[in-house]
Length: 171
Image 1 (cartoon, one colour):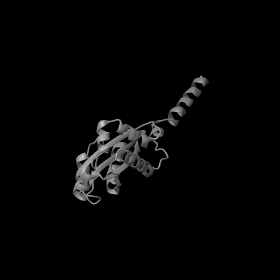
Image 2 (cartoon, helix red, strand yellow):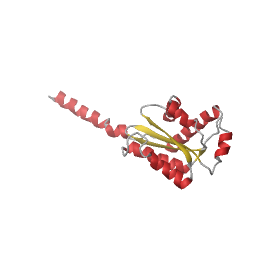
Image 3 (cartoon, one colour):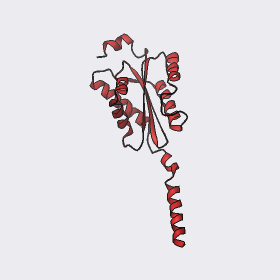
Image 4 (spheres, helix red, strand yellow):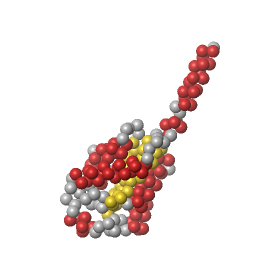
C-alpha cells in the first residue's frame, strides 16, 4: 500500500513538473536577435544569387511580430489569415508595393532561425518570395504552444529605392 502511494505521489510530481506549462514556457532567447538572424540569412542567400539585399523596416517588423504573436497565442491558426489586413496597413499607410509573406512554425529544433530559412529554401513558393523583386523586409518572432512562430514580409518600399532601380538590379 505504501509502495503504491509513493508511486502515485512520484507520478503526480512527475506530471506536474513536466506538464504543459513547462512545454509552453518561453525559452531564454533574444527574439530581436533571432529576427536579425533570419534577416541576415535571407540577405546572405539573396546576395549569393546576385540579388540586392533587403533593408530592415521596423514598421514591417511590428506587423510581422503582431501576426507571429497572434499565431503563437492561438488567436489565429498557423496561417496567412489576416494577410489582406497586413497588406492594407503597409500599402495604405506606408506606400509598400508587391507584398509577400513567409511563415514558419518551428518546434523542437535547434537553431530555429537557420531551420526556418532552410525550410523556406526547400519550398519553391517560399524561395520565390525570398527571391522576389523587393527592397524592404521585416521579421517577427513569437513563442507559444511549445514552438516559435516566425513571419517575414517582403515588399518594395518606394522610400528606399524606385521600382525601376530594383528592376535594373534584379537578375
